[in-house]
Length: 332
Image (cartoon, rainbow, N blue to C red; front, side, top):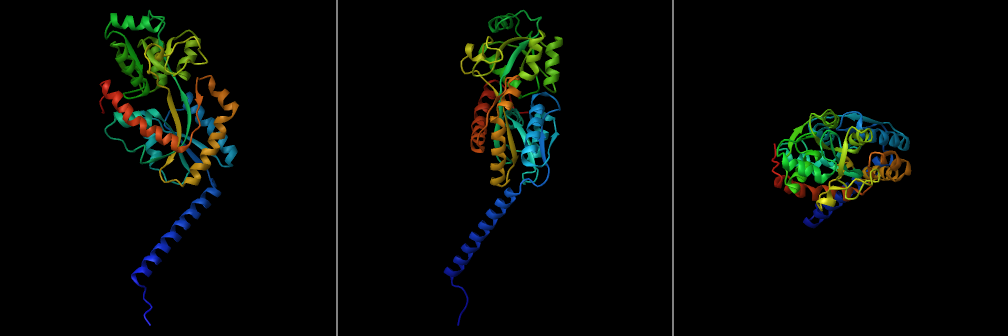
């Protein structure tokens, strides 16, 4: 009697093996999520210690530690406009024990302005959730003879190329926002890049440069102390912290750029782990205490699904590529 399998039998056997393999993989993923986490988690922050992002990261790490019963340890990996920390996270094991606090600057803008990066935000990172959004503020040194946006534009037109602005580097959100503003206002202001937000804020404070677009954590304390004069914000609506301060879009419709921050994991992390992190983060972001804690910086908590964050990145890459090219910003 011939016991060998026919062609059809072999195909059925192969299909059965594939089904069993998929079921085993699914069971393994479910199992890994069920006992996740069972050891400490590393949260990579591609920023220096202190400042808004680091403060938020440590708040989130403490919350997750208490909720999930394992330590979440913040590891600051600044440098190269966030590329160093992002690369470390992208290359980590896809097991959920390395996560990243990423941003629009590091994952969208950086991708466009650099010819070579050690990571691809779409291919190498798995979105978990949006975290928060924050507007920037156009601030000037008090010595600048302009009290309104119109007065600043008129001053810049009267002195083309004589005024200067600070940013945290080529292709940063501060750089892009100012270049968009310059294009719409038809003015010429000199770009002076610095290594970080603290350095750029100090440059404006000391008068090394005349102005900058700064985040709330960097700008608002100086504004309250009378060391900066705020002329506009970049949000889609006026900030609750400064309701009398106009937005750029009131003068130039459509010119708004609130920077977003999100949580990511290396690509390949099992979906049940992504979902578990998403649920915990969503609960944290919806807490009144969280919203109140970061409202002082003008930050808006923005929980989302992984799919929403992924779609945002995919849509922004071509959009900002065009904006940068129109502004004359070329990849380096």
